[in-house]
Length: 97
Image (cartoon, rainbow, N blue to C red; front, side, top):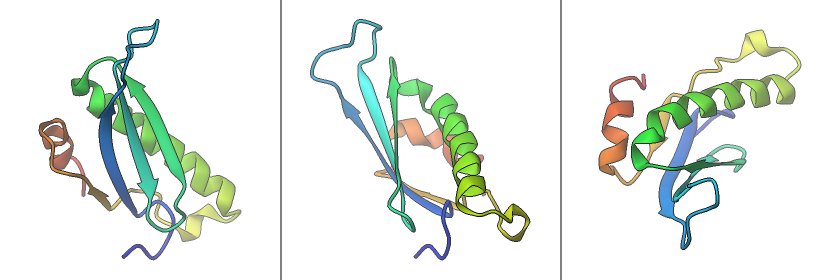
């Protein structure tokens, strides 16, 4: 159970019924367990997950800085990512603390 924002996220990847004009075929959702804040990203290929995760980390840091005026009291690193263990997540498992 998360004790602060940005600590634990739940995630899943879905398929868009029709590809967008820009070629996006997938969406990925990350839900912050503590705040229930939802981050959504589009992907052209499922293997773009690593790059999307880096974008998520940046957005989480920005959001935490916005939520808390004194950032130095909080660790802004994601501690756990809860997924359905899809193959796309294997690469991330190596970098998540």
